[in-house]
Length: 264
Image (cartoon, rainbow, N blue to C red; front, side, top):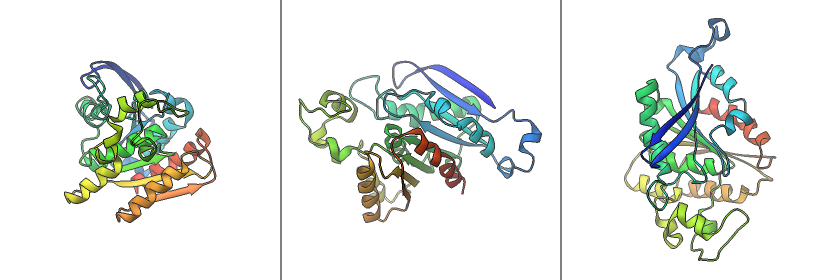
């Protein structure tokens, strides 16, 4: 298992950023004997961290290295700061472009990975679950499958909020800097529901989705609402609820099943 930390200058952010990446390109033959996952091309997963996290969260909190080896999958974990992986207000805040274009192009050129849509997936937890859903829908020609775990699908919580608004996570200024004009949020490209409707209108393919959330998670109602939206729009989704809260125990419980689903 090769582990990389790549520090690079990002045009999307106008500064240095980094990502971590695991690539099972040096696994001893005896460890993969009889493993059918090595009878195909290596797949690539972009795996996004949550709010207040960093690019090494999945390395520290999950068995991501073991799973990369088991399933012959390169896993790239970018640094998304607290951006919701959106193209925020102001220059140097294009996080959606960072993940969906710049890093995809970088690993294609550098590692010859993620060349084809069917080999390229995106997933994340909490804020990163939102980011995976949004980025996957924003770049449907790049990502074939999307996984959101405990996704922070908060569009309807913050729409139309005004100066002075504050919740336990952040305030109006923060949400405005990430999502733009909150009065226009529902009909903007920062809303995954808007992207779904636009893809349907333009008769473009919608990436397959897998969404899981714990029944004790503070984001469960937001996930249920998004699931209902997808049902109303006749968009296929693998939706799972089970006992659990907003923690690594839940995310680790569903990381391997979601990888199996990506490969199915």
